[in-house]
Image 1 (cartoon, rainbow, N blue to C red):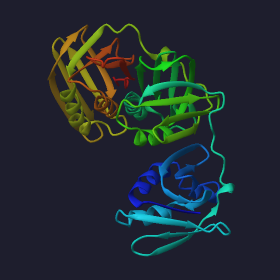
Image 2 (cartoon, rainbow, N blue to C red):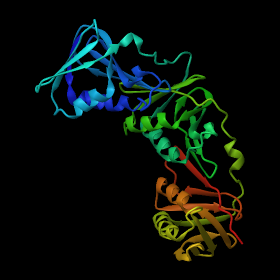
Image 3 (tube, helix red, strand yellow):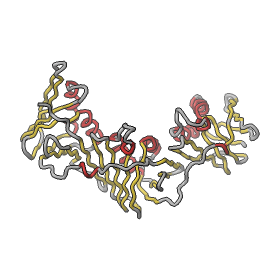
Length: 372
């Protein structure tokens, strides 16, 4: 089997697929790419048995076949070459691989492609279609709020709730929660599933920033994302997602409107003086004025700033983790944000004042209790 391909085009595809390869694989062959040539098409697959990526590229081929190619040495070789055609010749008896470039020859040992684990394919799966741009937006706006607590596996991924033409994506770590709603998808199913963080990080780097439609299909065990010449499969997190609606307070009479960038920059300065364990900042809000303050009694550090704002409600003093607020304000867009609150012990709701068409985002942040 023999084929030729542009080194830079191949490198791009390998970088995309290579994200699925684990640094500590359970089987040695999982350190490889699976190359399958059929006609003039090369299919590249990579998996860690949880997340799999398959992508294709046009090549000039002589003969069909498959081989498992060591990933690291191949990517390192292509990175070190300037763009040029490279030719792969695979010995079908011992799976030795010889790569020829304008500079010389490079030999490496491959493995039998038949020994590569099977990659899941959709079987009786439900399907929805969503634009790549909207899916990317949803991932970017939710992924940061997932938990790293392996004892609560459900919260380490993003919860997808499909309801006919609506897709809700939710992420929470019990301190903050993000709910992103997309109301213009095409689908005829209702379902829900939890997608792991690794798969979404890979998807984020692979998705085009266009209106190209992404097919999202899912069965009880896996989710599949298909767009362009790329397919991604991932094993779903088999756990029950917490009832997120139960923690969203419905009656929030105290409403603060403030410039997003001013609020974020103030928090970044004030948190320098906050207790390093809690990152607690105190918001003291009265008519037309917001005071942001923090103190670290252990080091006698203290800081206070005053910001102009629009406020409708009773005077309120409430504490939040500034790092969480800064992160959330960085993900929100628009000039102005709205913070809805009820009491100092209940969660605050952070919203942009203007939502994009067909999209809605709501963020919740738990208060840090004020010490008397």
